[in-house]
Image (cartoon, rainbow, N blue to C red; front, side):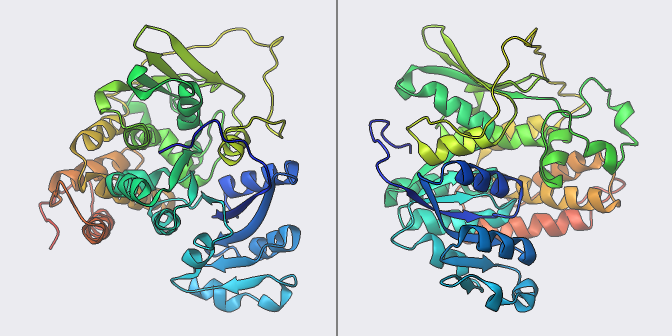
Length: 402
C-alpha cells in the first residue's frame, strides 16, 4: 500500500488537487506556495465554487480546472482563465485530469462519498493518492485497497491521525505492530451528559475547540462520528482488525496518534493542530523538508490530558467498530446516512442527537451484503440517503433496499 522509504524525490512532483477550494484543498495549496521548487499544480477541481477556482487558476496556472456542478460550469467564464489552462466539465472531467501520464500525485480533498470517483480513477491509472477523503475507504475500503494493489497505485494518508500512525510505523514491519490508538479532541461537547445535548444548536456544534474545518467534518467531530469513520479508515489503510484499533480523547490535539509495538514500545507523532504538516508529508514522502506548518513551543508546554471516550453520550463510535467488523455494505450505509443526517441537522430539521439515531436505524434495516460490487455500494448509498431523508425519531422504519 505504501511506497518504499528509500526513494528520494529528485524533481518537482506534479499534482492534481480535487476539492481545491475547500479547507484541505486550500491548505494543500499553501504547502505548494512554500515548496514551489518541489511541487507543481497541474489540475484543480471544485464542485460549485467557480470564483474561487478561477482565482486559484490565475495563481497556480494549471493545465486544467474542473467544475463538477453543471450549473456552476454553465456560469463559469472560461475566457478568464490564464493562457494554457482548460476548463473541463462533465462526468469524465476529473478522470481526464487524474489519469494523465504526467500527473504524479492526486490529492483527494473532496468531502463525502463524492470523493470516491476521483480516487478510483487515479488508482486505476496506478497513481499515488494522498487520501484526505476518509469516506472513500469507509464506503469501499475492500474494493479500493484491492484496486490499488492490482494496479500498482499507492494510498498515502492525509488525515492527521492516520498520518501520525503512518509516520510512527516507518522502519517497522507490519507484523511488529500490536495495536494503534487514534486520538481525538473530544469535540465541543466533551464532558457533557447526553441530557445536556438534547437542545444543541448548529452554532454550538460548529464551535470546535482546536481545529478549523468545514461544517460537515466539524459536526462529525461533535458527534464523534469522525472517530467512527477513522476507525474504519484505519482498518483498511493498515490492514488491522478493529479489535487492534483504539480511540482515546486528547483535548489538546498535540499527540495525533500512537502505535504500540509487540515489545511494548509506543511511538507517537506530535505537532500543533495544523493540517499542512500531514498534507506536506504525503506530498514529499519519504523526505522531510522545512515547510509552513506551525512548530511546538517547548517552553510553553505544561501537561497533556487523556480520557476514555464516553460511549453512552456519543454512541457513534460503536457504530464505527460495528461497521469495521462487518464490512460489506455497512460502510456505504453508515457514511451516506451520516451525510444525510448532518445535512438535515445543519438545515435545522433534525436534532443533534438524532444524527446517530438515524444512522443506527439505517444500519439496522438495510439489506446487508458481505461482498458488494461497486454498483451495489452505490445502491446502498442512495437507499440510505433516501431513508434518512424521511426518517424521524418517532417511527421505526423496517424498509429495505428494493
